[in-house]
Length: 232
Image (cartoon, rainbow, N blue to C red):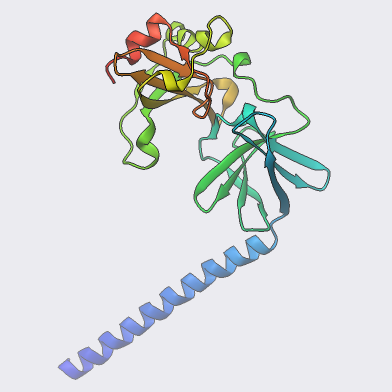
């Protein structure tokens, strides 16, 4: 085959591949467009919460309302979800895997919050039996994730939560110079979700826990958990 013929064949193959790629991209976008066009639209509202420093968010469609407030702030979805709707501004709404009473709203790729069916009680971490915990530096949201420190020791998990059950007096964050961590808690009762509390260390190595990562009430951690978390 002459160079001219090889060039013609090469150009022809390139054109075919380009056309195929364009067709495939168009097909994907067309299918996405059809899907989004037929996706139910939820009314999304956000108002100040009764809890200072928090917002109350709602998703409403027909006679169904889902809400996200202080109690749900620490909840996060594992990501094994499927889309059930969208907001008028383009936010995507997913049903949390295996949790039919919970939805999660995403703005682009970032989760806005986990929402519960308003007909069920607010989430209460005190009623959940956690069986695993994973401790991450708080900066993983903006940096490359690091391997977490993990444990399935139930006594250790109970000790991590004990200070927040009402047996200890909280302190103000301004009293401590700290490093921040997020402790994710897992349970068979929370399939598809986890609950995150705040963990803080001061320069002296003292450890504090908070009901969620925004809470302004910190509690001195128990001895077991302090020993486990110290040195991070």
